[in-house]
Each structure stands twice: as C-alpha cells, then as structure tokens.
Length: 131
Image (cartoon, rainbow, N blue to C red; front, side, top):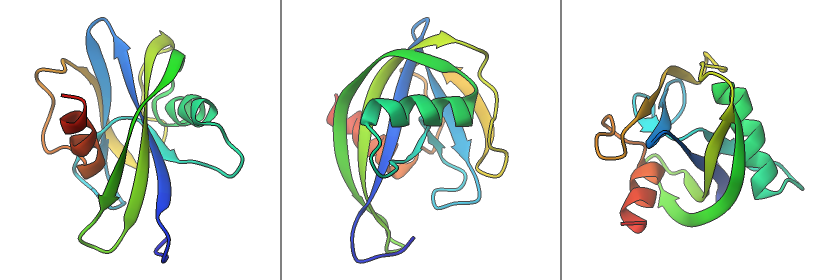
C-alpha cells in the first residue's frame, strides 16, 4: 500500500446509549491501538456507503443517521500517508462482534470520557480536532 500518494481511509464514530464503539487493531499499522470501525474508501463509493459497509464487515452492526464529521491528514513514522474521513452515526441494529479476526482482536462500547489507550493515530487526531 505504500505509494507516493495519500491513501483514503474512513472511520465511523458510532453512538449507542451514550457510548461509542471501538476496535483493537492487529496485524496492520497501528497494531495494539484502539480505533473506530472503518477501512479504505473503495473507488466510486460514497462516504456513507463505505461507513455502512465497513461497520457491518468489522463489527456486525447496522448504523443509521450517517453524516460527515471531519477529516484528518495523518503521516505515519513508517512512511504511510492517509487522509482519513470521519463520519458520525447511530447504532441501528445488531450485536457488536469481531467480523475480521485478522484485523482486530477486541471490540467494545466505551464512554467517550473513558476510552481505552492507546488510540490509533488518526482516531487521536480526530478526537483532538472535535474538542
């Protein structure tokens, strides 16, 4: 995935009963950090469609009221460069389960005031931007 052009990632901050859904990453850059469900934006895909697809694939849940929140510019020490689109959504239905065992090893709902650490670099940048 290394290129001379930034990649486009997307993360979804999903709210349910005053909590947000986070996944613990493994196997990719950011292994061992916590982030919102998300992934790569596919060619021709809308932000909303990507948010719904990635949330279902990674966390087994459906979302509603999907809307744009912000974007971050993330240059990683290992040479990767991502522009990450962040969306907001509400939980609609389903139980949060790990859908991609090769990409994450924990999932859970957390109070925004008590998030697990460490956070994935783009997630941390997003949360700083919206404060």
